[in-house]
Length: 459
Image (cartoon, rainbow, N blue to C red; front, side, top):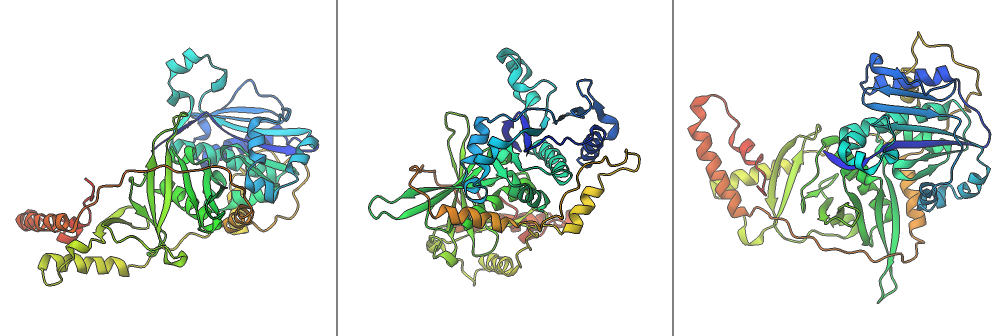
């Protein structure tokens, strides 16, 4: 799956005083983390631009840099991170703290040996963006995992004062970063839900929208929920749920289709055209959730089902009053029977938000190798804090979101999606029955219902 080109995955670990880790320990961590994401040890080469504390490795197609002597620079990216609702609420002292930062450890994972922004424009064009930046979801997530694990280990082995995760503009306290790095769903770190407000001119009512910072590196699109009356923490949850589904299935949901984490949740996916920066937007619109008083309009709607491995198991169309299914008709009866079976299937369990402390320690200890040098002398970390769950992050964002001012007017229209009518469904079923009957002698084939619910309604 294509993503928006990402030249590098960067993080910064910020300190009030200089406290570099031993260079040999850094080398061991880089090689072990690269092996964890599938790069053989033999493919990891130390570059001669390294020194005692700064290490540069070429690990397969990944150029990994850990720089411990760089000066901290207050960049526009840092300013953007400080302006997020999360930083302003959960880390309000960050702006003043940055004035005291004396040392910075930079972790950077790139695709090319030469930094992209240092190349002349003509060379960028000749080389092609795919040779200079991460453009596929799989390689982007691999690069993020390398950066995340190296950052997490260094944070655990030192005493930093702040951590900046650049892809999603996350400025975090060290324990908060560790909590998100330990989470089973890494989208909680890779995607930062950032709310914005809009006021209804006629009534003065405050509506809340939610933008997913970093979504373009995961899906290839901005992902947004337009201002509405739904709770902000719920909007944050569905942004992350959409990203999680997309990453796990390596596919995007079609324009106009719906998804949900349970039977009573239906969220429509609406695509908008690209803006001047070449990025399109995916709007997530809650069209059915009785818990919040939102009931789906009675129009034909296609639903696609997936198993626990996110393989499509079937789809069906319902909601058309003008073409009700007749239980006395053999074809309609078969459709109704299958629909009832689908409704009675239990929904899959969500993975826990956070792994246990023991699981995380096992992951980190697995990176240690018996042939590596002994652990160097540096201050051990304090007793690990209990990891904050993603819901606590979302709650922090939601609490601040309710106090937002009117910031912008959002709104674009999206063409409606083509749906399969019940009449078309009946015709397809009849065709499938004929096909099934004529092919029985050729050996065991997929049954009538299996064929019925594997067809794409919009093809």
